[in-house]
Amino acid sequence: MHCYFHLVHTHERILDETGIEVSDLEAAHYQAIKAIQELRAEGEADEVDWRGWHLEVTDASGKVLLSIPLDMSQH
Image (cartoon, rainbow, N blue to C red; front, side):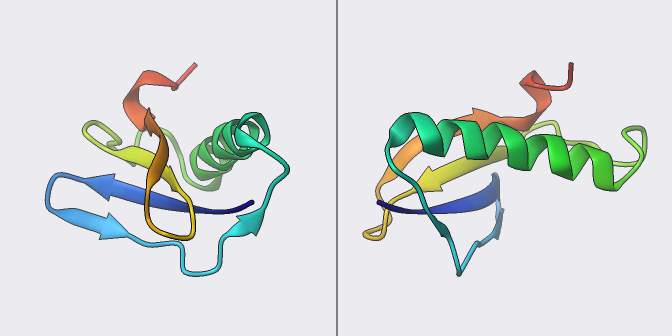
């Protein structure tokens, strides 16, 4: 299944136009967590305020399969 990983805030969306192929929803969840960890590693944690942001995993039709709040997974 092809999944897209969008960063979403109340009035802002950063869209993943490429996406990746995953075997199932569990693999998509793993990739989402990995993407969040990479986002945190790219910048200093203190510089970026992720409150209110979510990483939405969608299928090719745009249906949201997962939504992970970025401010909840800062550990």
